[in-house]
Length: 564
Image 1 (tube, rainbow, N blue to C red):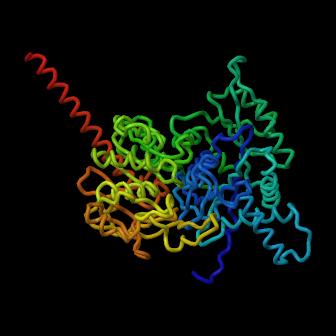
Image 2: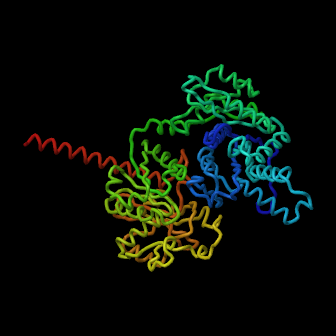
Image 3: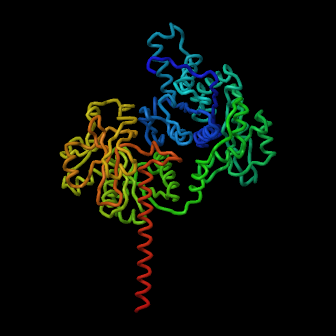
């Protein structure tokens, strides 16, 4: 209730996940999978990511540098690992669930300027580490009590920028005791083909780095491409000062959603409970196992094109990729994604690039580069009745294409690309026109949307009102809305707070829908987002229709040859 102070539950447990040897080992997936192990036992779990970079948040970072910016319900621009957390433990994250070095230092410096430290010399220890600890403990505060808080420390052990974070969790472990804090270290055990054996030395050195800081890991997760023999695990345990039962090999899996099940079979769930002194029910994966099975052994396949600006870095579209996996599993189909650079459409025919695809998705992005290519791809999909799904900039490009080629507004353009355009069918939001600062100033987070009955969107959601997450500065210009609708681009979703266009559709098309928000941010393995679900369904139907037509033509051709 408002005004009522809420205290952290005293027996909250903390699990800290660190990584060593090399980056990109999959700490986020591993941490999220551990969260699933605990959730499957009925425990209440939340998660947090500590990022060592000095940026306040990833909102101003290039997708080529950082990958996807994950937006939470409360409008925080966060690390993409928060997407993994939400998908695995099915709990919404917020701005408290991601802390960066930039945020930490900014807070400490603000307090110093305000005089909060009473003239003391401000230092990394205790002020920076104290701020980090405060941020970690803040996650466990609130009306909902948590049994376990999982905290992932970004970067690799040995990185200079990670040291304050590692020191902070060391202090927490010392203060709260072994039954309340657990340290889990993800490392690499590589196989050397010329030697014909796996090598444990990288893991030994990684753990040595941790122990020099004062952290003794309780559990080791060893990334490997093959099962580790008993003698190898015993060697790792001996030199890393852990029990043989606390060394787990984490082999490559066919789908990352299989990892919780693999870790369960290895006994990690039971070991976590024992080390934390927790009691819980038997794990329940009845909703998880069928999804993994359908992902691994689908009955159908479909190819969908993604035409984007950052296709060289797949992590730029991480949530989109995962949403297609979820929707594909729902339809018992494998979605094969064909990645096409948007600029390719400016030099090659769309028919050539899309001829083997049963659907087209245009994702979000910023800047003019590749936009004309996206418009060309959308034009092909609209004219040739190819299922189409536009997201954020994808919707804006679809609006420009329709305005130019159907409404006769040949100069239609976005203000983002041309300040002097005479036909700005896409314009800045009213409160964005004078914004100078780039960080955290877009329209961010969850907003309501009212749906038009009888539309594809209403059919998908089966409700009159929804909430979805946003990250944009521009919108469909309402000055052109009547013209667009009169010519067939129907507005089927509107934000009531400002009469902003959220969804557009074309009726005389198998499936043509574009949205201003980012539906992929709310898709879950057990509950695919309705729009991705229906889009993939339309693509599967289109693929089967084409296949039947080809088969029919083949039969007719054979009959004709026999008659000749």
